[in-house]
Structure formats: structure tokens, C-alpha cells
Length: 329
Length: 204
Image: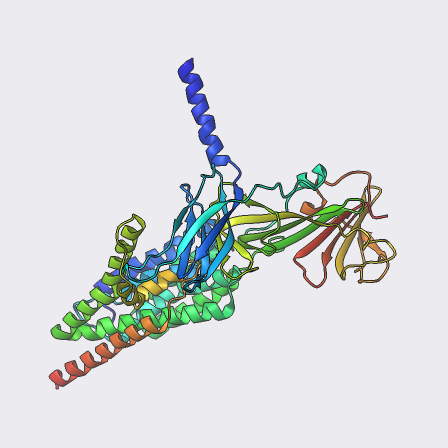
């Protein structure tokens, strides 16, 4: 019985380690030049590289993020090249501690925090089955025609054209980079989610944010530059990355009488439970007229509060930016 | 004159390695350059020292015809995946130049025993040997032992294989200069042209 319980505990612990959501902590590092190629790492493979170089006598204190699904040690391992000659002046990198963990999304209402993240399609185009067939047939013909090389080359060029025609980019709904600004007109704080495949920039690096990945166990590596105010970059090939933060409300800039933000197109509203598509809503103009019944993309219409009017729209200038507003008066 | 049986067989084995990954699930290669992946087996095998020399132009043209479709499919997938057209053209052109240059040099040098030996030595050391040695030493470096010296890294950068491997990751593409491997391939081509000259002189 005890063995069974111990085994179950072990399995649960292992499962916890595999499926644990990663957390991001910000370390403070003091660099003294001459130094370059500094790398911070944790035992589970989490790492952050500091790009750039400090010359002799230059000192800088940097915030460096590390993302790990495991426990954070008191200090990460810090590596940087040391000169072989002891007479050559060497720089140093000193870890000053972790910045106190702030709950980036605490100011947000629970309903808003629980909403689904933006949908990102897989940007990796699939290999059409027909293209594999074309490859095989072309290779067989080229080998068969090897005595008549010009003909073999003509077959190869023909196959190349056919392959370019067969391969298509992933279709609609497979955007690689999406920003969703989400909130209610009566709320003080709104939610901003930046989503991207493979890598994402955190522009306001000193503000509080939450990084999530899909799949959750993805290994994230960070890049930080020594220049002040340079954005951080998180990399995780083959992974969807989501940076969520609380932002100031846009309430007061939206009324039915005036769009106080940017040109919006397309635009949908939900009134009395029914979705409608509207004409494009220009900045400074009153809410545009109804075009007909139509729902917005599924990921934007799911998990919304019931009984309140909704506005869903896309920035006409930056088409990767979506806006979702509850409680349009 | 048709390409020799051994040459055809070797090219077919490299073709299987080049085209094989297209059969696997595309998501496995998320973030990878399919063009560089398809070209790697050809670049690695094109300059392999060969013993007998057939019709050089025919053999190179045959290899080109065999490998162009996998390269085209790789390029089409990279473009569909969002890679910049200029990047794909640049990388594709460089890889084609490497493979064709090395294939020509290998066959042109095969006519004479002396030039064949020089080509084999240069290829084993500069194209294949030093990059492998560098990779092994780098691995030791990550294990806490003394890593590869900087001069070795510089020589390894000149190998077309190293350059091709550096292009495999679309998100963390190597910034090593193209002129180094291109220069090396041109040196191989020059050696091949010189070898053909010597062979013609001796024949006449």
C-alpha cells in the first residue's frame, strides 16, 4: 500500500514537472567591463543571453528574465569568456538577486483574466502529398534519362515549376503575430495580449508581464541587450508565445457617437445576443451602419460575458491588432 | 557517355537523404529552413573524392537535375512559411553554387592520380574534417573542458557544410560570412580546372 502510494506520488510529481506552467522571474545582474557574451542559465536548460559588450571600466545593472517550469535557485549560473592571460584585465558579472515576483495580471478582473488567448495558426506550411509524388517521379525520370542530360534537366525544371504551384501558404486564420486589446468600458484596467510564433519581443521590459507558452513545457531562451531600454526577446522555436499585461483603459475613447482611437475594419457588434457585421468605423466618426448578420472569428466570440453589448474590431492600419470591448453604451 | 553507375548510386543515396524529410510531419521542422535541410546532403556529398572520371559536364548536370526538385520544394516551403524572397534566393543561389562547384571539382580532379590525391586531401581537411573537429571540441567546451580555439573556428567557417548547417535554423541563422566558403569552393574549382589542363596536356 505504502509502495503504491509512493509510486502514485512519484508519478504525480513527474507529471507535475512535465506539465507545469513555466514562470518567468527577473534577475538583477551587475556587469563590469570589459565583458561580453554573458549567459545566465538554470539546471533545467532555461537560459538568457546578454548581447553587447561593455568596455573596460564601464558598469551596468541589467534586469534579465529567465523562464522555467521548475523551482528557481538562489542565483543562476553565469558564464562569460575569461582571458587566458592573467595579466589581461577581466570584467565581472555579479548576480544581485531576483526582483520581487509581481502578479502582472492582478489588477485585471477575474472574467477578463480567464478569457481565451488569441488564436495563432501553425505557420509551418504542410508538404502536399502530391509534391512527394512529383519528387519521386522526377527523380525516377532523371535517373532513367541520365544518358540524355538536357532532357533530364528539362524534366527537373518542369518538376520545380509543379512543386512551386503545389505548395501553398497556410490559409486564413493562421496569423503569426496577433495583439488583442480586451476590456470593458466600465473597467479601470484592460488586458493586452501579444501572441507570436517562435519569438516575441517584450517592449516595455520594466513593466510587469506574464509569459505563457503553448505547449506549456516549451523551453524559452531570452535575449537582453546591454543598451538601456532595448526590448527583451523571448525565443522558443515551434512554440506559441503569449505576453499578457494589464494596460490603461481605453474607456472614454469609445462611444457610439465617436471612435476616439483608430480606423477599424472589419467591425462586429453583439446586441441582444445577435452578432452583426458593420461598415468600417473611421476614427472620429460615429458607429457605422449595420451590414448584416455575421459572427466574428470564433476565438474572438468565445467566453464573452452574456447580457452586455460587445464590439469586436480589427485595426485597419495594423491588421494584426484586434480590439474587443464590452459594454458599449 | 552516361554518368557512371557508382556516381548514380551515390547521388541517389544523397537524394534519399535530401527528399526523405519531406515525407515526415512538417511540424517537426517548425522553425527550420527546408531549403538548407534539402541541400545539406548534396553539399556534403557533391565534393566527395571520386576515383574514375567520366564526362564531367554530364555528371554534374545529372546531379543538378536530380537535386533541383528537392531544393525547389524546400524553397517553396520556406517562402510559404514566411521567409523573405531575397533570403531564399540568396541562400538557394549560394547552396547551388557550393554543390555544383564541389561536384565539378571532384570529377575534374579525378582524371589524374596526383590531382585526385590533392583534391581528396583538401576536401577531407577543409570541407569535412575541420568542421567535424571543431564540432567535437565545441561539444567538449560545453562539457567544461577547453573548447575549440578561435583559429579553428575561423577555418571551420570556410567549409560549405558549416555554412549550410548555419542556415538550418530560420530563427537563429548563423551570421558567418558567405565569402569564406565561396572562396574555398572557387579554389576547389580552380584546382579542378588546373587538373583538367594537366590531363589534356598529358593526353596530347
